[in-house]
Amino acid sequence: MHKIFSFIIISYNRAEDTIDAVKNVLSLDDVQGWKKEIIVLNNNSTQDYIEFENYIKEIPTSEKYQINYIHHDQNLGVAGGRNFCIRKSTGTYLFFLDDDAEIVQKDVIQIVLNKFEQYKSDNIGIIGCLGKNPFTNELQMPIKNKKLIKNKDDVFYNLFYGFGHVFS
Image (cartoon, rainbow, N blue to C red; front, side, top):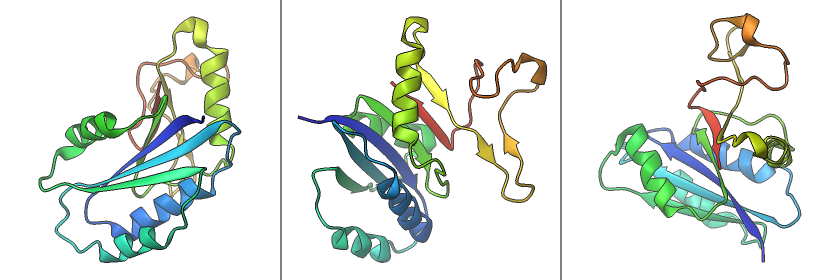
């Protein structure tokens, strides 16, 4: 029996970006004993998602992942959409990913699992991802006082960007 690692993607009027986001998640390294659950919420888009729907129909079934596509009949907003998807997910970990974001570290699942294990005595609850500004190529984190950064790998702070973060 596999443990579940959920990826939650909320989309509104960006079907092509959502295809890329699902492809990105499927391309991530698998971790033995873990299955990827991908939940995609169409947040009542006004644009047609037939291209996305056709794409997910063509993805072969696998024991390594499952895709759950939900087209909601009302726009729940970001917070409401995330809360809705939390209720639909079955994962031990929930990775929230914007539909136009890309995960560049292929071993991110193992990295996240290692970080939660490493800091379990600290009761860590959320891991936020760094973002790269597509215009300047600079890494971004929501921290104003850079003196608080003692270790470039792990920064403990009470803010994180919504485009990519993981809850336990």
